[in-house]
Image 1: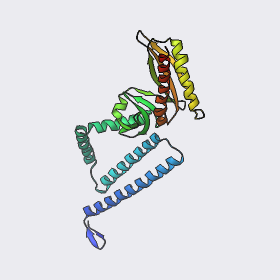
Image 2 (image 1 turned 180 degrees about the horizontal axis):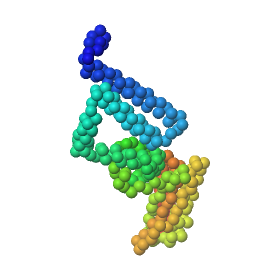
Image 3 (image 1 turned 30 degrees about the horizontal axis):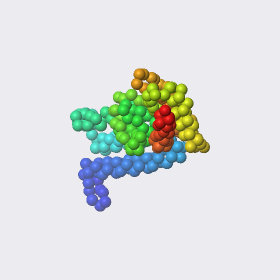
Image 4 (image 1 turned 90 degrees about the horizontal axis):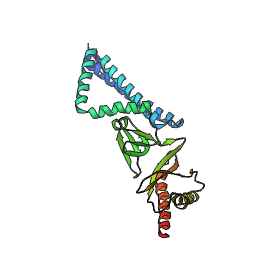
Length: 261
């Protein structure tokens, strides 16, 4: 059946193609409008970035589903074609893009289970840093080298995750080792504690919790102390600057004490 279109005649197939194209354009426009509304709404209610990413993903999947349904409807394609095409695409992706598909599945897992949130400070396997973004493919970490590291979500899902952020603070720990030249009491009272006190005074009024020290272990060669360092959540950059500062104060006291022996 031919249909008149702008003074001319189009075949039935061409008419369906035009209608399908219009439908897809409408879906695209609605998707863009909803995406912008979602971003504005998320900013207004201060929705967490990981939750906003999950909603964006749902919107994209919905738009893809509506687009596929429109094509099937207007071209009157049998559902068997869709199933067969899906199987063919799935096989192609399985052979050519298995890592990408695995990342997508892992991304869903990370978004749903929420082992961490944006701005949490975490250790993922051998990597550590502040979570800046959780996307469907990667988790972005702001690392102690002041760089952004993209960790594939498959690696996130298969790694041991240590979340150092709770009760509103990054609770970071690092080790300092000393020989047996000085007693444990001398090291704590004349090396580490004075450094912590000086650090606390230097940053008075900045809302930082005072660092803590514990003797973690000792052997024939050394004594190892655990320093607990506290930083407000989301302030990894300050952590990367101030933690070495405290360590430098400790080592300066150690050098002075060693020189006085």
